[in-house]
Length: 104
Image (cartoon, rainbow, N blue to C red; front, top):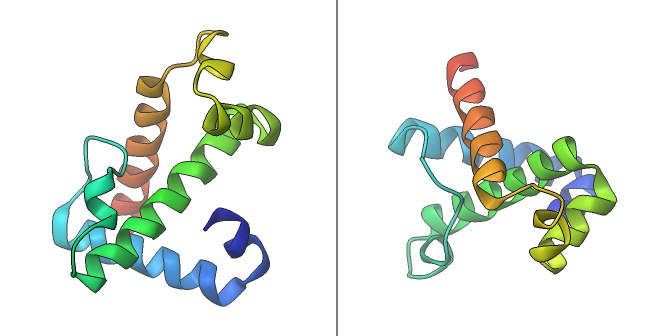
């Protein structure tokens, strides 16, 4: 999803709209998107789940750099061996969602 939105400005705008929709409906989550966001028949929730996952990748890249973020997602030990944890990514992600919620 992150790669697609780098090349599709309409898709990126749609994802931002889904993130805002999610925040309006549910508020700021306390965790990263889970498998539950990608299951079921709720198309709104599914589209929002993909948008939230794309934002999580964007946040990881902003904090770690592209190569380290890709290594992290490919093998969670790649970055955590250097002291970065999933809790760090969660903190950054939740902070970005809180920032977006405040700016709405």
